[in-house]
Amino acid sequence: MPQIHGNTEGVRKSVLEQMCAMYEAVVAPDDFMPQDLLESLCGYCASINREVALYITRYGEIADIFIGKADSIDLPDLRLRRSDRRLSLIRCVHTHPSSSGELSDVDVSALLSMRFDAMCAVGVSADGRPTSAQCAFLEPGGDGVRMTELISARRIPQEEWMRTIRETDEAYLSALPNTAPARERAVLVGIESETSLDELEELARTAGADTVLRVLQKRPKPDTAYCVGKGKAEELSLRCQVAQADVVIFDEELTGVMQKNLEELLRVKVVDRTTLILDIFAARANTREGKLQVEIAQLNYRSQRLLGQGLVLSRLAGGIGTRGPGESKLEVSRRRIRERLNDLTRELEQVERQRGLRRQSRERGGVPVVALVGYTNAGKSTLFNFLTGSDVYVENQLFATLDSVSRPVTLPRGAKALLVDTVGFIRKLPHELIKAFRATLEEAKLADVLVIVSDGADPEAACHRQTVLEVLDSLGATQSKRIEVTNKADLLSPGADSQGLAISARTGENVDALLEAIESALNQDAQEVLLLIPFASYGLLNRLRGLGSVLQQRHADDGVRVRICLKTKDISFALRQGAVLLKE
Image (tube, rainbow, N blue to C red; front, side, top):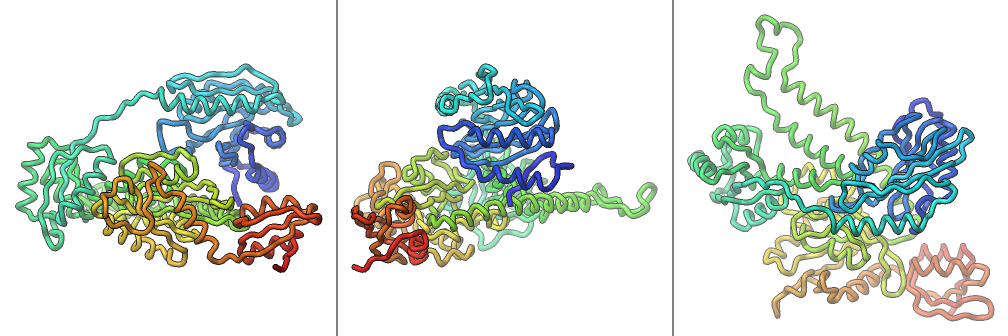
C-alpha cells in the first residue's frame, strides 16, 4: 500500500490509511487541482493541524503525499523529466492550516530549486474548508517567478493555470543559458581492442571528459599489480604528465590493489569502466527510485575496494591511547556503508512495492505491456517519442535514458498498449547495476512483447545484439514474444543486412509496419468472436476497444454487433459485463 511520508509521528494510523485514498485520484489533463481532491486535502490538514503537500504529475497521477509541521514542510526533490533544461513535470499543492494561501519565501525558494511545474499554497480554515490560494510559476530564465493574485480557493482557474505550465515549459527550454562546466582531460587505457576503447571514449564523453590520449596494450589477462605491465605503467606516467591529464580511465575492472598502485605511480585520479558507468548513472538519475538504485550500486562497489593504509588507519596496533576495544577507520567505513545500504535497501523495497501495485493495477485492467530494449544509444527513446508523442530526453550519447518511462500507445486497429522505454544495455554492464536495477529491468522481463532495437548504422550491431540477448537471458526474460528491429534504416547502405524489421525512428520510415507487428504479436493468443453489446451495456464497447482489435461493427435493433479479436480472459470479462456471444 502506498505510504504517507514526512512528519507522520503522532498521526493516527486510521487517518494515514484514509489519506492514502488520495493516491487513487486521477486528475484530468486540464485540471490543476480538482475541487473534490482539494476539499479532502484541506479536511485532512485541519484534522491533524499540519501542512500537507501533494505532488501531482502532468499526467494526472498523485506521485507522493507529505505531512509537515503546523507552519512548514520539508519537500523532497522529485523529478520525472530526465533533462535538467526542462520543468520537473510535477506541481506541488500544499496547505497552510489556520492561515491564508499566500506563498512564503520558502515556497518560492522550493519552486526555484526543484523546478516544479507550479507551486500552489491553499489556506485552510479551522473547520477544514479551503479559503484562499496563490500560485507561482517559474520565469523562462529560471531566476525569477511569476505569482498570481491571492484568490478564493473555490475559484481556481484550472485550464488557465495548466496552460501557463505548458507555455512556461516551452519558454523555459529555449531561454535557459547553456553553461557547461569545464571538461576533464582523460587518458584511456585498455588491454582488449581499439573497438573496446572506442566505446570507452563514448562513455568518457558522456560523463563529461575529453579524451586526450589512448593507450592499448594487448594482454590475455590484466596484470595483478597494475592491470597493464609495470613498464607500460611507468611509460603511461610520463605520457599523462605531457598530456596534462586529469583522470586515467581503464577499460577493465580494477581491484583495490591495482587502483592504489596506479594512483601512487601516475599521480592522477584513476577510475575503471565500472566506476565510469556508475558515475554516468548517478548524473542521469532523476527519479527517487533511480537515485536509490545508483547509490546502492556505488556503495556495494566501493565496499569491496576499501583498503587500509598501514598504521594510519588503525587503532589496534597498541601503545598509549590505543588500548581497549578500538575500531580501525577501515572497519568504521565498512560499518557506515553497511548501515547506509540497509537504510537504502528498505527505502528501495518500499518504492518497488509501489511499482508492483501499479503493475498489478495495469494487469487487472488488461492493458498489455510492450518494452523497448536494446544496446545503449540504439535509438530507443527516439522511437518511444515517435510512437507515443512524448518528449523524453534524447541525445546522441550512451545512457541518455536511465529511468524507465511508460506511456500509452494506440495500435492500428484501435487497441491500447503500454509502451515502456528501458535503460540501455552495454558490454561489461556492472554486476552491481544489474542487481540494483533488477526491479526496473523486470519491466522488460514481465512485458507481453519485447521490441529488440539494434543500431543499423553501427558496424558492431551484431555484437551489441548478442550482448542484449545475454542480458535478457540473465534476467530470465525468455517467455515474452520478441520482435527484432533494426533502427536508423535511413543510414543503412544499399544492400546492407538488417536484423528483422528495418525502420527509422527519426523519419518514421516503416514504423507503421512495426505497430502492425506488435499488434499481431499481442493477438497471437486471441481469437475472433462475434459479440452483441446490448444498448444497456453500451459503455462496455469502449472498454473492449482498448482490450482488442475491432474488425467490424454495426448497429442492430437489440444492440451493437461487434466482430473483435480478444483473449480468452477478456471474452469472459465481456460476457460477465452483459455481452452476448453470437454464433456465426
